[in-house]
Image (cartoon, rainbow, N blue to C red; front, top):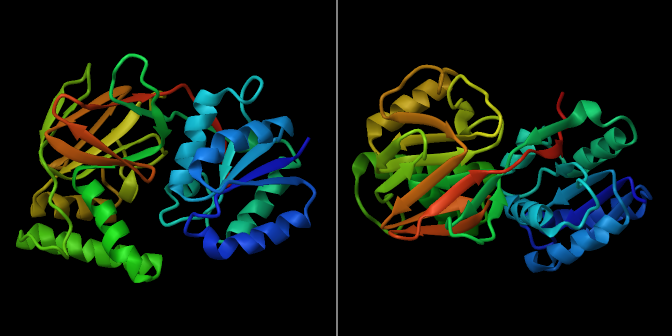
Length: 323
């Protein structure tokens, strides 16, 4: 039996420089069972092996895409007897949204050391539950992909632009995200098409099943089960469990400016803002002639007649480091 099982993806961007230090740390610490995968497709086998050592905590060391793949396999695989152990995420990768939500930030090795210290004691004060987003085409028998943060419409185009145009420049993450923001704002205000600018989003229709429908062209579309939306937004005043949080911002310069201003004041989602839409739901359907969404790093396409359907799952335990 191991205190902590660490699942590492050597091919994630952060691990290209970090992994030697992680291997050295694990070799000196008998409380850690370290398993590395060579590709995402090996995660099922990795979890099967990890389940044999019955860890108290499962730690994922990779980007958001690695976390998404591990959560999907945890949900569908049934590798653990009873409930799987709580999941912790090291702050690794380009965005770290899931790690930040769970209070893991800064140096990954320091976060790992903190996780081990927590695992040696009573976990109860550090266990939080999060529903996951189950993404499918809505057909019967479809195997959903699981994640916690989905970006669509203009946000998906922005993520893909940053991934394919900016990250290859080899700049620090902060500078890469700043340049992406400048490009997005320039495109929004100047309204020109160019190969060096992000693609403009396409019209989408979002159905909340029991709570109406929203149609339009949006610069930002977010669905998440994380505690907070991007930019500190709050999806309404209710905090009913089992509901996904949704935010969309119209693709107009003024709606974007109002969203940014409300975010800077810490008021985003607290009071109505024209052009900024908030909603919550347990089933959300996205229809479009053709529009991309990105779920924890993985890209999916919605086509007319082939929608993307999102459902919230039962709660899953995670380990949160911050009090």
